[in-house]
Image (cartoon, rainbow, N blue to C red; front, side, top):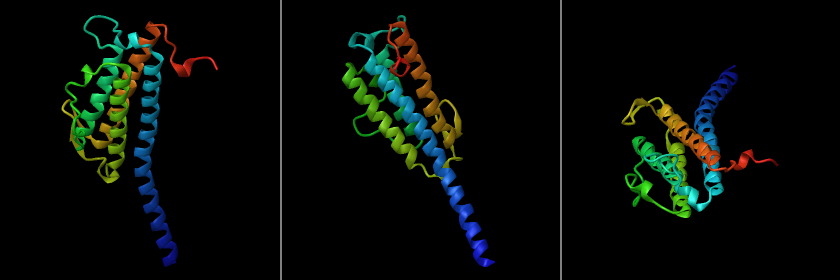
Length: 172
């Protein structure tokens, strides 16, 4: 009987641990997909379309991608992970050229995804102050995902406005 009780306790403990790990892995998988679609869209635009903006005062295609990159670092910083040396989130939107924009974006996505997985699952309910809202760490991770999705949608609209079909929407 003691052996059965011990096995049940072990199973409950492993299940709880796996669920915590599964939360971050699930968010990471969705984030990786959305980030990959932003890269695919960026590669579908021609060089001149990276400077296109729908109206004066609205971010260009490239600036939008860089805004997401800067936000990745900002949100990671609010979760306790300062940006790497040499990264200035305040001037990031001034980067030009598709290769430089994609390099900055890809570095930010790798950084935020790595740091997201470094968070102790037991601390996901702890409160963090994002500057615009106080919420728990799990909600902050969801903000990273939602913000990426929001601007992926913006970039889809930019693409359609420029006659660019998102690569995943093209006929096979």
